[in-house]
Image (tube, rainbow, N blue to C red; front, side, top):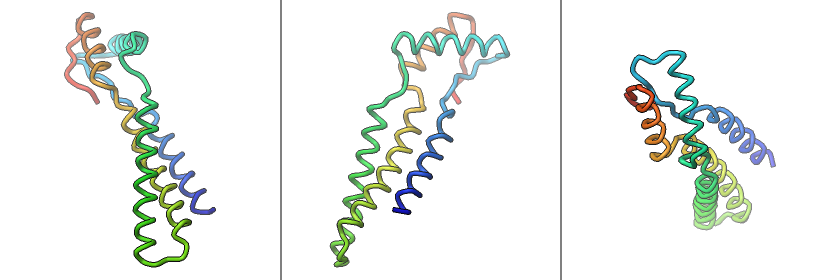
Length: 134
């Protein structure tokens, strides 16, 4: 049970830490007015359906992590002849799910290409030169 609490604690810390890591456009000669326009273009892109959180990707990465962790520890435990293969498999699945969740959250914080193109075009129409994304 302690392992489960540790995994949960580490996962929640990582998820909270990654929450603000979304990439933003960098405009040449930007300033406070540019930041307001960037925020507005990002809002318009989300409103148009060009981006947003990808819950499907997060769920998929979590499930894949759980499957990989459970399979790896289950096979290892069976090969080594451990009596508690089921417990080891469950612990591996929990750890794998935590890794998959963190990976999914990290990947979902990155805007997709449609969202970036929408924001780039919106900013170009407002006279900005987008030089990249950070």
